[in-house]
Structures are given as C-alpha cells and as structure tokens.
Amino acid sequence: MNKIKRTPAGEALTSLILDLFRANGILLTAGDRLVASLGLTSARWQILGAIVDADRPEPVAWLARNLGANRQNVQRIVNDLERDGLVVFETNPHHRRAQLVVLTDKGRQIYDAAGRLQVPWVNNLSDGLSVREVEIAHRVIGTLRDRLEEPGEG
Image (cartoon, rainbow, N blue to C red; front, side, top):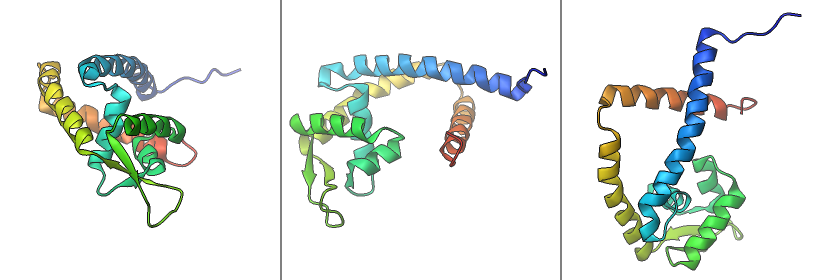
C-alpha cells in the first residue's frame, strides 16, 4: 500500500498551521491580560472591534460571519456586552427578529482605551520584524483564510 506523503509545501504549511494554533492560544491569553483592567476579554474586545469596523449596525449573525465565529458564541458575548452597557440592541427595519447591535458611548470609550493599551504592546511585539516580513505573513494567512472559506474546503 502506498503511503500518501505531503509535498514540501504541504509539510511547511502543516508546521505553520500548528504554530498558528499555538500562537492563537497564547495571543488570546495575552489579549485577556492586556484588557482585563477594562473588564474585557479578547473575545469581547474582538466583537467590539467588529462592531466598530462595520459600515453600519449589523445583527449578531452578520458579526459572527464577519469574524468567522459561531453565531451562538457571539450572541452570548453580545448579551454580556449589552448587560454591561457597552452595546444596545436596536430594531432592524429589514428583519423583525434580528436586532441590530450598536455600540454605546461607554462601549466606544472602553474600546478606545483598549486601543491605547494595545499600541505600546504591539509596537514591542513587532520589535525586530520588518514591515515586509509582517506583510508577507499577512498575505499567506489571508490566502489560507480565503481558501478555507471556499465551499467544501473548511
């Protein structure tokens, strides 16, 4: 029986994927520590960012899709953010049941404070990396994401 072998690129990509898994866990823990004083977690911060980055208020399902996340998990976190006064739900004129998630002034202040904490942290983290190296890594990860989002790939 022939054993299926990875191509050299497949082998290199497998190593990269394993490192991405490890880095993701470490990154989430570091993010949690960075914004804990603001009452945030990495997950809450990420969702606030998705709300800020959206062109207009969106329902939870759209936020989840944009994040590549599970809708139920995003709903749970958005509910927590609403309980803490960082977001509010508004009526969606296009869908009665899918309310729009809107950042409050308090939510904007917390998100901006997290950004101020992130600047020196990310500058330190990027020390010794060239912009070109970071851009290449970004391109590779973006290509992987795009391919994984193709129907039948993920």
